Image (cartoon, rainbow, N blue to C red):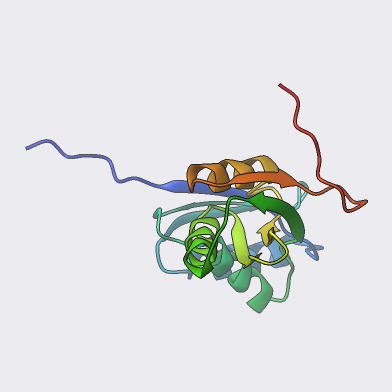
Length: 155
């Protein structure tokens, strides 16, 4: 019988608020305590954490561990225009798909506004990965620019 290597996911994300080696050690210990985390390494000079974990470990759990240790994993909010939704089941399906996307902390989808408001951990997800998730779920999406208008994709 062949031993199959265990699947893992790797997350690299910024951590704010660390000022010394003790800080980085505290963050490493907090991340290592998250169930499913195999390794956690913090680079103080780069202000980043690198975590190798089971695929079912959620980025939100890693963020919570960093915050419980007294530090911050920067987040950003991405607003997307979504078309093709027709009912509450569409909204539920899309929210489920978005929250399952690596790097997503939360997702709120509005049928009347035809938008998805997604909070991500900086560096773990992007507008492009969210658009891909939405398209794979059977809908169309465009990131909204800072001025409130949809961004046109080239290519």
